[in-house]
Image (cartoon, rainbow, N blue to C red):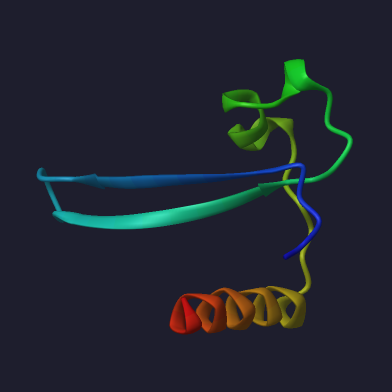
Amino acid sequence: MCGAERTYLYSLGSQQGNAHLHWHIAALPPGVPYERQQFHALMTENGVLDVRPEEAADMARRVRDALASG
């Protein structure tokens, strides 16, 4: 969908405090060496992608459409 090397899907939440559950979809850009993948790729201190709001909205629309047609 966006040319990712891999896509990580993880859920966060807790029964303590404000009990909730939410999911993150994290695309790993192509060309990232294997030793910098996995949890290393999810650490914000290693950098984050700069995605324009309209690009993020387009990706969200495509994910929604794919799920609806699934």
